[in-house]
Image 1 (cartoon, helix red, strand yellow):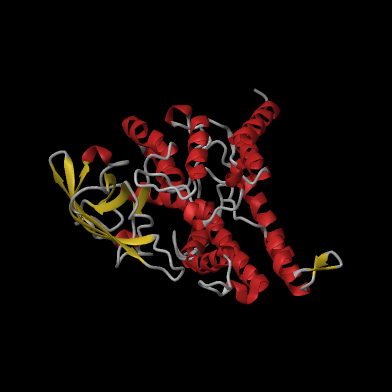
Image 2: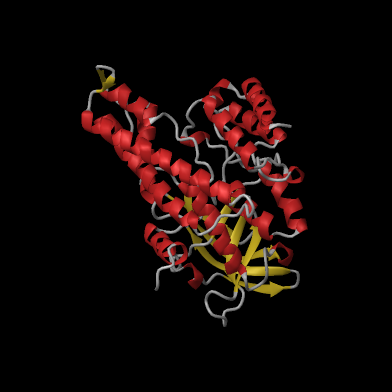
Amino acid sequence: MSLQQFQEETREWLEENCPPSMRTPMPADEYPGGGKRARYKNPDTKKWMDLCASRGFTAPTWPAEYGGAGLNADEHLVLRKEMARINARTPLVGMGLSMIGPALLEYGTDEQKAEHLPQISSGQIWWCQGYSEPNSGSDLASLQTKAVVDGDEYVINGQKIWTSGADNADWIFCLVRTDPAAPKHSGITFVLFTMDQPGVTVKPIKLISGLSPFCETFFEDARALRSNVVGNVNDGWTVAKRLLQYERTMIGGGGGGAQRGQSLKDVAIDYVGLHDSKLSDLELRDDIVQHSMNDRCFGLAVRRNMEESKSTKAPSFVSSMFKMYGTEQNKSRYELMLKALGSQMLGWEGDGFSEEETGHTRAWLRTKANSIEGGTTEVQLNIIAKRVLGLPD
């Protein structure tokens, strides 16, 4: 099939199957994460997810045998453009697609891929990440959660923190220490296990945005099958570093970027107004134009990287550049939105503020974590200096 034929077929399918409500900006409480405990405020969210999963469009570049569409880079770009053309929402999000799925494709056994990937691409399972600990954040390799062999299983004891979505997760991919005597970057193992078992306790942490996506997670004699170790025992740091590159690419928008709702220009026009067909606030107009230009340049840089990495299909240390710049762009976007909305973006509740306005307020507050999660901006700058620019220590 030629690329033009693929585009025509894709456009026709999207027009016929994407529900009208899925062609609108996505509210925070309608994100399609899937999982056994998922509850859908909008029934079209589940309908759209299932339709796309049947076509392989939830994981477009994954092999068909794992629920993907097997698209190459050019076809994937066409799909993204066609979805953007009708403002179609992303049908499925989460760490399954953006983090553990790609890691399993690279490091998982055939059995692990066959078990987990189809359940990810169909939205059946929600995953969370067990990395950070109260005393192991930026210095992640100092983690102390322990795993001891007991027959065909590991017995796991310890604590994780900032485990996003753990209160809704079905499975966790977790870093555990299996050799306490080894140097801190060694003796770490990457293992998968279920959250719905005795010995796993989850406590949500309320954030400044009013939401509680982050959690404390406690393990007391929790169990994981030894067959669910990804990569080699005591070499989990290798898998962990690669997964962080996938995570940083996702956070920074290096995978193509997520739909971010109404454009800055449209928001500003709604609240500031026009004068002679131009935004009446000259300074804000200049800021929005500069931000749009930066977005465009960032998008071209992402496209270039995708073209250059066609053969490997895996992220590199450039992911740190995407993470740093993409998150700063997102923070800047909401600061400009605050300038446009003024006091209407400082409301929390009440008749004086629309649901959209209070949503913008919470989203603005949430962006403050962008430069911390997935490795702080300072960590990314160190990686860029050492691994991208080759500067001396």
